[in-house]
Length: 282
Length: 325
Ligand SMILES: Cc1cc2nc3c(=O)[nH]c(=O)nc-3n(C[C@H](O)[C@H](O)[C@H](O)COP(=O)(O)OP(=O)(O)OC[C@H]3O[C@@H](n4cnc5c(N)ncnc54)[C@H](O)[C@@H]3O)c2cc1C
Ligand code: SF4
Ligand code: SF4
Ligand code: FES
Image 1 (cartoon, rainbow over the protein chains, first blue to last red):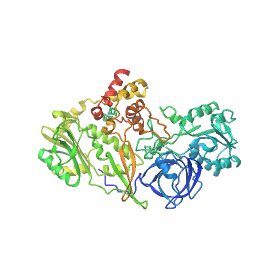
Image 2: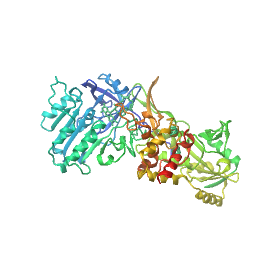
Image 3: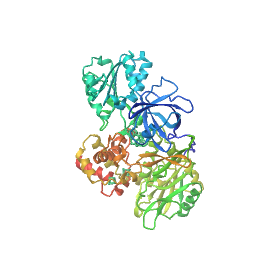
Image 4: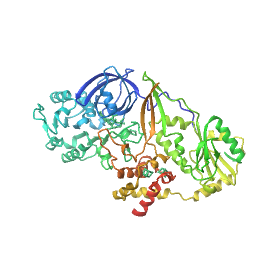
């Protein structure tokens, strides 16, 4: 047919990255700061993910947890869940990993600008949301009020605790945190109960609000119902992040499909109305 | 460009092609199996039942090295192999190839597939080439040469420049014969009509969940349907350490298997056989139509022949139409 095409790299080629620092977030989560070995910026947008590999281990999708407004590095908040993530937890600063990406549709910043934002995260979902929160912090005047809601299983499961307190005291955001259960000896001063409890008594200007939800699969339906009760009923008012198993990140391997959509390409960030009618999406 | 080849001319053409290409031709094995196999590895078989091994595996094989990453982190792509030539594809084979070309070459293009595909030479085989010389309709699509068996001779239509180059020097063909073939081809009924009906019933949500349960209860989870299917494109990626660094390869995967979508957290959006069986049919008859504007099933019948319990695509589509229309 057409002439031979010779390419130097492939959509499956990883780029070498150096680990700049590793910090413990919880007993099972760590924050990794990385830099591309050639010194270039990742050039991601909040909500996008990368595929990370360690020599000999198959890559896995991880959301970028830092904002592109912070130069010279990017960060990943990673839970020890299986083979690759456990190996990553054993690495030390200075060691090398491979990444592909950034991939996926990011948070639609153009639609969020000027709006009152409700940023809602559960558990690990704070990692991708942190990238958007940092972006709002660095470009504060682009957005109206920003409220952050975070729910975790227990105080010790809360990710990014330093960030959580800084956001709470910094004056830029209105923050409310909750845990499912609080041990008696805990000094956690947030609330107890499901994340929906934080939303029930809110006073908002629904017509000018946008909500973003990132969390475990079980969180979506109750949070969406709570938002609907608050009056977020129009199109482009609720954004969700949907995670699926991902092997390629580029729309080819088929593992991430929801009906006709490919989460890695058409998502992971979707408007609610794009997916809520699809079987198995939420 | 229309040419006429006799049997010896055809052999001569295949011989010429085989010098520069890794040529696969319909081959008859000693036990009567007919399949696409390397030229010269067995008896050339110009009529007979459909070729069960999917021709698309020449470009998307069951397992395939994608690249090697050396200890420095430098990526090396595999050395290009001899380009592939396939002879003997029928109408559904070419429809499957067209489907897969569009899928893999949609941005971002899968360069691993595209590199092999771009250099390939494709020759169909139609006319009196079916079982007991029964008629196979013309393809007229996505091939370099259309070869049609007519009265013991071969009418060769060069579609691409590459194909025409190989036909130079052979005698001219009779355009009237081509017209006759076209007329006969247009009269063939295609099972695609059945699939369209099933597709409509599915998208209208006329097929209840208990139907999927009933079909799924029969499935023995062998994954044969997916592995046989020429439009199935799902794969897993594997990295393995070797002497030279890390070898990254891909291997076919099947949506009929439990691990297909299971996540590290244990969450599994396709966590039951019922959901997976629905997915196998629904993806090709509804999701692909939504995404690509076309059915993802070309009605080749491979999965129906592969399935040991009779729940291949055409069998299920027939059942859907019978019960829910
Ligand atoms: C878009 C996206 C963003 C993510 N962001 C983060 C993040 O920021 N932090 C974090 O800790 N985790 C994140 N995850 C989940 C993370 O990808 C899994 O925990 C990880 O794949 C587990 O890999 P493993 O090799 O350690 O586990 P194993 O169970 O050994 O996994 C084997 C393979 O299964 C696949 N797989 C298993 N679980 C998942 C899963 N949940 N999602 C996708 N593929 C999976 C991967 O291809 C992996 O290589 C994200 C997932 C997605 C889809
Ligand atoms: S008939 Fe079966 S094997 Fe052939 S294209 Fe359709 S689903 Fe695939
Ligand atoms: S071939 Fe039949 S039995 Fe085997 S996995 Fe497919 S549907 Fe199930
Ligand atoms: S991750 Fe492979 S298709 Fe989406």
